[in-house]
Image (cartoon, rainbow, N blue to C red; front, side, top):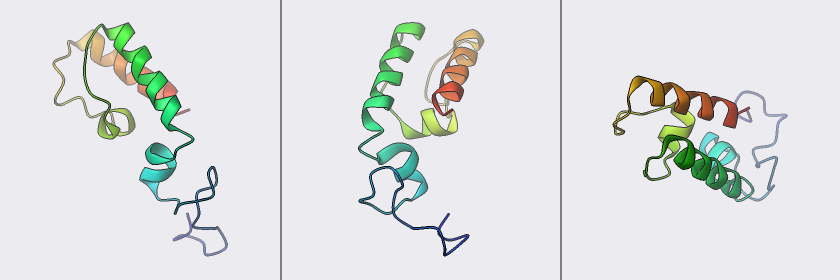
Length: 85
């Protein structure tokens, strides 16, 4: 947002320590790590699958490397959608 308007600080509005890039504010911020870990654990239990935590999966819905049937793919997309709300 700082690039759009110089009036907005470039520092993360949550942790106020690092630059607030997209990746930091939605994935790397230390205040979000436990949330993404919980979401990943929930996803494992719902889908009954083992896979690594991935920013491309949870932020961009990139399911390319996962072998999911249509139903599980839809469930995963819903989980990631609500996780980002």
